[in-house]
Image 1 (cartoon, protein in one colour):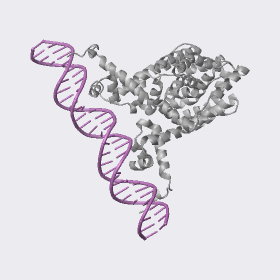
Image 2: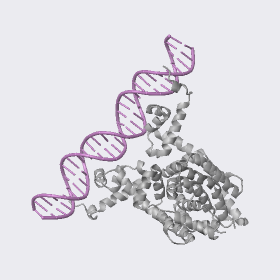
Image 3: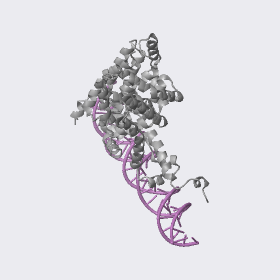
Image 4: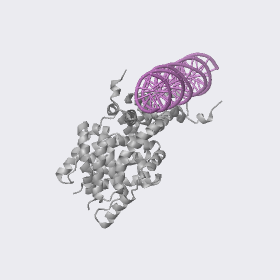
Length: 209
Length: 209
DNA sequence: CAAAAAATTAACCATTTGGTTAAAACAAAG
DNA sequence: CTTTGTTTTAACCAAATGGTTAATTTTTTG
C-alpha cells in the first residue's frame, strides 16, 4: 500500500527533516534540555532512525551549533575584513545582522550559551572551520581615525563592545524588554527594525567631535 | 565518636551549604543541566538530605533563580525610581551594576536564559515578589530633557536598550570577546572596570547637542 | 523480477536521574 | 539515662533517556 503523504517527498528529505527538527528543539531547549525523542517526534520519525542518520546526540548537536554559528559569525567578521570606511562598516553591520536575527531571534542566546558551557572546545571547533576572525584591522582603523582627528578619542575595544552589545543584546533580553515597556511581538519587531538606523546614528553621534 | 570536622559547624549551616552549592551548580549548568547529585556532592551531603531540606528540584531552582534575579533587577529598577538627573542615573547605574556583576559574572546569562525558557511563568513569579519595575518615569524624563533642549533628540526606548545592552552584554559574551581580542581574565576584568566610566561617557557624548 | 542495498520500525537495554523509605545517628528535654 | 524529636544516611524505586538490535519495508540495481 502506497503512503501518499510520504510519496510526495523525494529522496534525501529525511536528513533535512531531522536537521530542521533538531535545530528547532536544540535552539529552544539547549544541549541539556533537548530530548532525542522530541527531535524524532518533531521530524516525524522513529528514534532509531534518528540514530541511523546521526550517531549520537553530541554529533547532531555539534552540527546544529556550527550551522547556527555560521549564520552569525561571518556577519561579525565582515566588520573586521571589509575595506569600507568605519561609518559604512557600522551601518552595514547593523543592517545585516539585525536582518538575519529577526528571522532567527533565538540564535544569539543559543550560541552564546553553548559557548559559555565549554568555551575552549567550541572556540577550537569554530576557529578550525571558519578561520578565526581577526579584529586587529578594525581596531587599528578606529585608532587611525582618532589620530587623523576625524572622530573624538574613543577606545577601540569599547567601541567594538558597544556596537556588538547594542545590536545583539536586545534579542537575548526580549522577554525582559517586552515586559518592562509592555511591547507585543509586532512592536518589538518594529523596534528592532528601527535599530538598524538608530544604533549607527547613536554611535556616530558619540564619536563625532 | 565525635566528628571534629563537622563539630566546628553550627546549627543551621546545612541549609546555607545547600543553597551555595545549588547556586553554583544551577548557574553553571542551568535548570536542565544541573543534577541533584552534583548539588548534594558540592554541598558535601547525601541526596536524601537534599530532598529533606528542599522538596524537589523545581522548588530549589526557583529559590536560586529568585535570589539571582533579586541581585540584578533592583539595580535596574534604580534607574526607574530614583530622583536623580538623567546623567547621574546613567553613571550610577553603570557603576553599581558592573560592580555587582564583576563578583557574579554568570548571573546575567543565567537569569536571561531561564527567563527565555518560560517568560510568562518567571515574569509572573518575579513581579509578584518585587513589584514590577515601571520605566515610564525614566522614559518621560528622557523626553522631557529632549523637549527642554538639553539633549539631542533621542528615542527613550532605544536609549534604555542601549544602556542596558552595553552594560550587561559583555559579561554574557565574555568568551567571544576574550577570544576575539585575546584578553586574559585579568585584562577582561580591567576592561569591565573601565566601562563603568566609558559607557556613561559614550552615552552622554551621543546625547550632547 | 530477484537479489542486494538502503531506509525504517518495534522492541529492548543499560544508565542516569529525581525522588522515596526506613533505619540509624545525633541532639534536646525531662 | 531514657524519651522524644531532629538530622543524616544507605538502600531502593520508577520513570526517563540515550542508544542498540534484529527484523521489516522500501528502493535500487543487475
